[in-house]
Image (cartoon, rainbow, N blue to C red; front, side):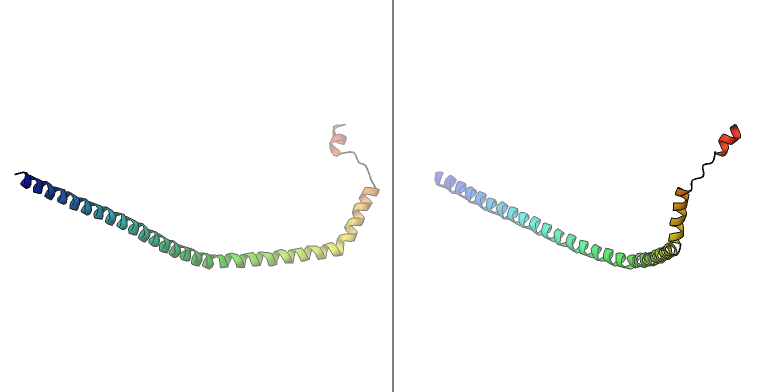
Length: 119
């Protein structure tokens, strides 16, 4: 009977080892699948990011051209006004400076109207 018990125990030990192998393989498979899933998810995220960046650049290119034109127009207008101001300054600059000098040199003090009216 002890030989039969010993054979039964040996069969149970073999079955337990086989079960441990199966569990170990299942763990390895699960770990591999998780790693593969992470890699696949990262790949999908990268593809989605590239797609959205492409859409954004396209949108930006379509809409920034209007801003560039408006900026160029504003720069041209500002340059025109600046040239106009410079030409006026060149033509009337001396008379303005002379007027300022005369105003500083020829002082004519006057009593303010409030003081005259209250007196």
